[in-house]
Image 1 (tube, one colour):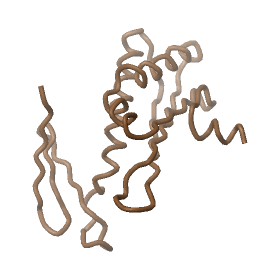
Image 2 (cartoon, rainbow, N blue to C red):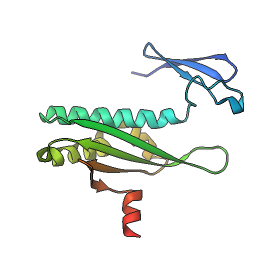
Image 3 (cartoon, rainbow, N blue to C red):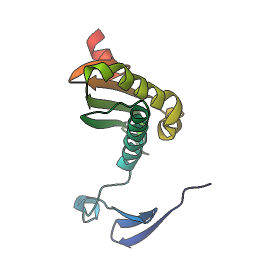
Length: 153
């Protein structure tokens, strides 16, 4: 089994990719010759990561009969200062709102996603640090990254 993506140049700095029948536009800002018709490519790595782990968490909670009222993910990729410009670390924030009785199940789902199921996270961890924190009903419930370092300082 393999994933396949076809990407074609549509002019200036714009490219259109087809992913499983869905069109995705990538472009560059006007200041570098594009027309800003879509995002630049690099943040799609962060998009893939948040989508992968988010789907894991929802599926794992659903399997246990748990639901969330709201679920948001934020990914921050720290960029290198020299070329090639690449991510040197990534930090995820899981923001979940749900019943207090489901808090531990939510934390376990995030842990399982990060330790066992999320293939995107697994690949990225081979080349750079991926840290995360979980905010449940507005309070930090877990952190192993920058928020933890700030709290210790």
